[in-house]
Structures are given as structure tokens and as C-alpha cells.
Image (cartoon, rainbow, N blue to C red; front, side, top):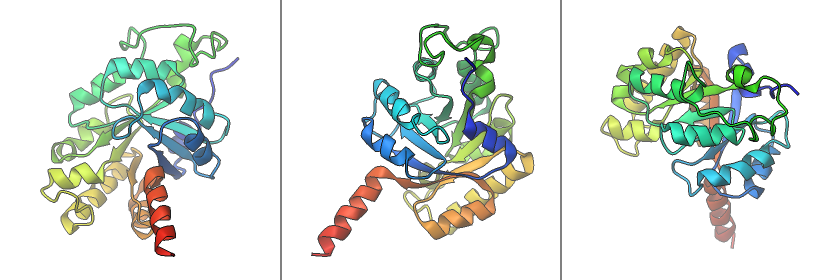
Length: 253
């Protein structure tokens, strides 16, 4: 059998905007629900959520039932051991947090690739190879793998061009929360200086021809970021949506 197509990566290459939603609740039920809700991609978060690497496998299986929905996984750190485990589970797109330099970008690329161009360990009996059924997986895997790097500090913005144009990087995700803290306005993601930095970063990425993305939980703001050039935009977080719904229900009574 052939290696499954990475629809998220293909859409970015074609310039089609991809609408996403965040999964922070462990298990397979919530990611399955999110995957069936009509979004283009679902991110399984191992950085700020109580989701360990071992829990990603059932989430990927649940999301994978919806063949046109892409799973994106955010590892806890830019760590080749974490990459290796997630990729072997069948993750095809990783969103790597807190990348600040071109050297860190190169390290992430090498962790995505088999030798001689990288350091990803080889294992044949994995979900990624569909348990040995994907033909020539070790020489074709890279074609369908997608690497998104998260830039979320002032230093990262200063190095944006070098990070974004690193060979093997498929896109840049701007992290507004950490960026607000780095710029001196912790938690004020709507501060004019923070918004100016985000808009400028998206414009710089657009000029470079590198897809840029962001998260915004405010629909008007999200639409504004899309107009500014965001090519993959997350607009919801499962736990936030649940908290809002619970609060609204209680307030109704």
C-alpha cells in the first residue's frame, strides 16, 4: 500500500486556508468528536495539556476515521525522542513549540528525517508503516511529513526569516500568548504592540512564501488574522468550549 496522503501539507502547498481546532482532553472520544465537526485539522496538544505521548495513538486512530481531517500533534518540546515516538505512531504533522533560532529549526528538521539526512530511528512494525504494509516507507516517509515550527518570542521574531526558510520547514505558527509575555505584555494578546508584531510576522511570512498560522478564540480577530495572511488558523479549544458552555448553562438558571 502507498503512504497515506498528508492533506494538511498538500493544502498548505496549494495555498488553501485550513481551519483548525485544539484537542487538550485526553482519550479518543473528544478527538473523534472534534474530527467529525467539519474542521480541516485537529491538533493534539502534548505541551500544555495533560496528554502524554502514549495517549496520542488512540487520538490519531480516532481522528483517522475521518479521512479528510488532518491530525497535527504538538510535542512537549523540540526533542528527537518525542518526535520519533509520535512519528512512529503515525503522526504526519508536528507543530514544534518554542523555536527561537535557525539552529533549533535545523535540529527539528533532522529529527523528522531518517539518515543520512537526519537522526530519526528506524523501526518497521509501527502504525506509521501500517505495520509493514507501506511500500518503501523509509525512502518515501518524508514526502508526507509536515513540520510546523512555533515562533513565540521576540528572539524568534528577530530570527523569523532564518527559521522560516530553513530547508525542511513547511510552515510557521505564531504563538500569541507566549509572544505577549516575551514582548512585555503578559496575557495581553490584544495589546496594540502585540497585534502589530503578529500582523507584521504574518506579512513577512507571506512575502517569503512560507505558510503562517495562528490561534485566536475570538471570531472577529481570527478573521482579521486570516485577512492578514494566516494560512492555518485554530479557532477553538475543546476545554475552553466546554467551560464556556457550562458557564452559559449555569447562568441561564
